Length: 211
Image (tube, rainbow, N blue to C red):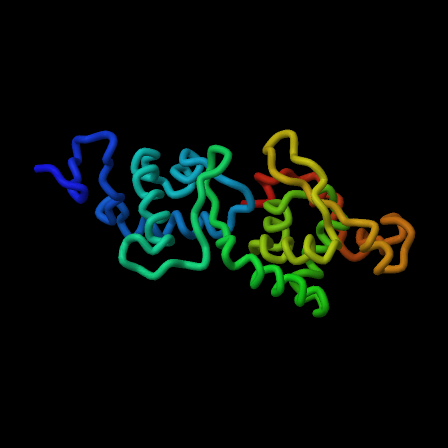
């Protein structure tokens, strides 16, 4: 049978649309939970390891998430999308809403820092350069959104990547020093008297901090 709307599953030039049958709810939820907290694209293999699933099964599910977020599977289109970039997957806000996101971030610069932001800033200041995962390990909660706030306000900046993990490193900026009214980080209060374990903490690697 021929026709513009016909689909031959065996025809490699006309592949079938991703099916929700390949996406069991529990796997979809686990993948979404991981994708919502990553700060850089993660590979299918990494997602498979994190969710305890076969890599082939994860590879089958990811396109169904893309289709779902794009509103192609019967559900409303989301304000975010799942993209495959640089050999990995990550959730991004849609470019169509860039103006709204930019306004939210810029307006937030006039607000006072939250307790979470102050805690994150303190960790970066005393242990820099430091990765997001290490900050999260120390605080005990995910710090991605807080770090983005600090970046948008110019209080922290990227400082290259960790040579072992490839994760982005962060450090405080001169603007922070100006805001605090100090000339260098050496003028910050010494915490060792109040936190005797700080020196031990500085020597711990990310694996220890995240367990």
